[in-house]
Length: 173
Image (cartoon, rainbow, N blue to C red; front, side):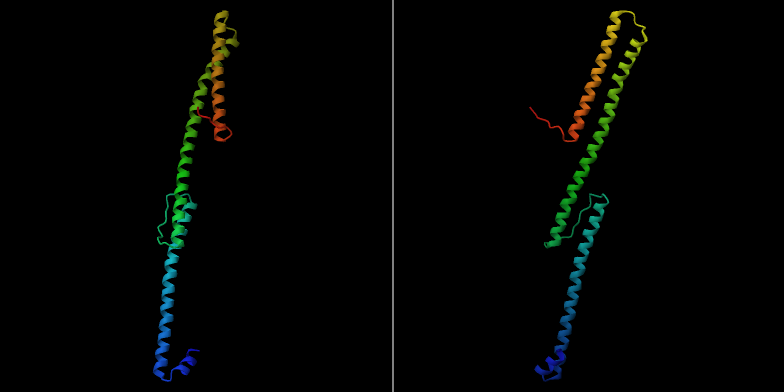
């Protein structure tokens, strides 16, 4: 079609050659610019894919710097905001998990003492080695105090598990 147009509109073979050269130059320039643009977009997408893969693997500190004010730039900003939120949530979750383990350790330790005392007191009472009614009553009250202490600890644990499960709400006064 280029040859036909050139033959009909230009009589001179030099003009036809120049037109063909200009068309080939324009096509080459368009291809080069298209390749350059697609490689720039591809590099930005590769950066975004790499960062998304890092997030998938739990590396929440990763951010992308793809720049630009176009849609890919906006996607990069949204991605960075999401990564920041995930990192903060992960940090909070790790802190809560650490606090939970420490609480379990403390409660286990705090429960051993009253259980040990109550057991020792009940063992002494059950052995029948105490003949004095006042001493017997004193031992019985000691066991009662330790059992009430254990009951309070169990109640506190129950309340904490209810708070964790969001089944209980606190009302500040």
